[in-house]
Amino acid sequence: MITSHSCFGAELPIPPWTDGATDLASQWRVQTGDNPAWARPEFNDRSWPETTLGQDAAGGQPGWRWYRLDLKLPPNHPAEALMVTGPENAYEVYANGQRLEGARILWPQRIRLNKENVLLLPEMGDHVTLAFRLSRPDVLTQIYGIGIDQVLIGTVPAIRAEQKIGEYRRVTGIVASAGINLSLVLAGLGALLIYLGQRNLREYLWLGLCLITSGVGGVGFESFAGMFPIWVNSFLGDPCSILAPAFQIEFTFAFAHRRPSWPWRWYVGVLLFFPLLSLGTSFGLIPGRPYLVAEGLSQLPLAVLLPIFLTIWFRAGNREAGWLIVPSLLAGISTPINDYLLLSGLLGWRTATPTPIRIGIVPVELTDFFSLLFLLAIGVVMFLRFARVNGDRARAAAELDAARLVQQQLIPMQTPDVAGCRFQAAYFPAAEVGGDFYQVLPVEDGAALVAVGDVSGKGLQAAMAGVLAIGALRALMTHYRQPAQLLSRLNEEIVRAGHGGFITCLIARIETDGRLTLANAGHLLPYRNGDEVELAPGLPLGIVAGLEYSETTLQLAYGDALTFLSDGVVEAQDAEGRLFGFERARAMSGHSPMEIARAACEFGQSDDITVLSIAYSTA
Image (cartoon, rainbow, N blue to C red):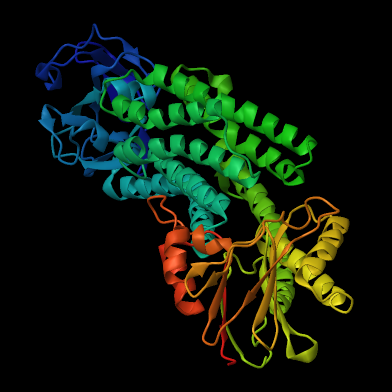
């Protein structure tokens, strides 16, 4: 038999000796404080209260704590070893007053909880007094609970086998958590890769950061299983767990195409302040248990209000917002539940610690189960979003192809040959397609009609309005040949179409003898040999019906040059807000259209840019 006893008391039985390992769970004497004399075997510990290992880890006051146990081993016993399960680097072990190698007290953040540690006992006869000197740092005791969970004694092979069994159980206990957290990190990296490929999809940026910080936070929490020193959770895991909800809020609003209101911004600011509080707790500046309560309460608005907002948006017509209700609820309640279970365990509320869900031999904690459900739900949501976005992109590509065909109607690649006139043009749209247009249309007797226009707005809608104007203009040419008549009739067609904007347009008729007739509907005035041509003003097309336009007639001489511009040239704006302006436009009007257009683009393009020039060369 192995027996245990107090130095000044009767022998007390403990479990019988076997060739395996014996659990030294009970009959320990415990005392708070620190005194080196308590390691000596002759010290009288009879006045110390008795305890069972593992019962006082969560409770009690921080500070130093000593445990003592007297053992009487059988005669001729083999070499013995201890396996201590507890906070590695937080205790020292003495056998008959001799400190054992392999157990030490280091910086509190280097403690590894629930770690199996094997200590070899020296040869010291049949009577052994074991003394444990345990450091219980203030904050760590409040958050993690610091205590010796188990001590086994036995032969070296038996203890080594028990160590492997303990390590297997510990690793098995966190394998599901590790797999789930790794999946979160990998999914987050995938979301970031999607964002890097498509920078306009900002929801993938915030989702990636949310998933990565959630996964890293979960990995840090595995410090409770002794996989990492406590500092991994203190300085990495816990701050990431707090950052994840802030990223989740940004993701939710970006996903729903909404901007967070100022209360949400303030709330995110509060969440971003908590990592500093977490670090303050790790350094002992802030009490641990009040911090856990505050952290759990800080997550409740996320768990409650975000699903409510999503429901409101869903009922308002944002169907995709409804997809996020369940994932948001799962993510929001995970941290409060985690903090509540941790705190309740420290306070000894046994009913608050649920039985893990088991998948085969692998246990899955409740918070990990919520994380798994969140990952699956968000995966479904983002698959549906990705499918919709790809469908929209395919439709947009088809529309863009159609728009390019439309653009060819607005901006012809070649101008027709007109006797005595040489045409040059340059066009730079602000978007894939633009609303600027120009046309050179031959008419009878060798004359030509030149039309330059600018549709309000940009993109495909403006381009379609331009095509409408060109189609109407070509149809009207069969009955009306003079610029003023064409503008008046064209205005009626644009008003009748009701496209919702307006069109500026300048029409010029060039005769073979150099006679030039112009009519203007709100467009920029042209330049002749570097001078602005004065024209009668007129309202743009499409504003009001029944307008009549005036004409101006000029006689071109050999070598005269005309330059027509859209307002994208004069409205080009540099980084300091200065406009390209009319003076620069006039000064460059004698240059080629390509030179003028490039100068405006390099200055700072903000609208479609069109330049058309006509060189008259008939004597």
